[in-house]
Length: 150
Ligand SMILES: [Zn+2]
Image 1 (cartoon, rainbow, N blue to C red):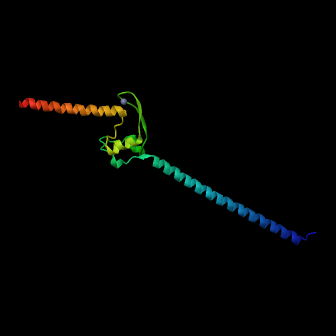
Image 2 (image 1 turned 135 degrees about the vertical axis):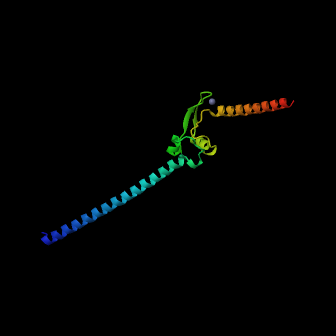
Image 3 (image 1 turned 60 degrees about the vertical axis):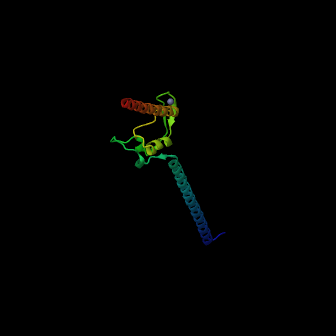
């Protein structure tokens, strides 16, 4: 037969062991929670960095002059997005990429309210047509000047 004192001691030991086990479990849970949060934070940081690096950002300081009082959507948005469009001349479907837009607005200083309307081959043709037209115009002027001198 166990004495009352022995039983009390056993119960106390039991309780102490349970408390220790609970504390260890709680500590383990806290540690796992911390690791989980750190992993989430790392993941979010990586995700947000990736999405930022993929975005072609608008640098408003580089934009050409804007005579209108408002600003187009891409300036408010802060980054360029690929824009599908239909060529005005040949009707082909093309995409005006974010990179092309950044070049157009910020390097070529194209008007902020202008957008691509011609596909690449038609743009080349249009440029050649303008050059020829200008040449013909100057050649015409030259002929006129020569005619008046005669
Ligand atoms: Zn075209």
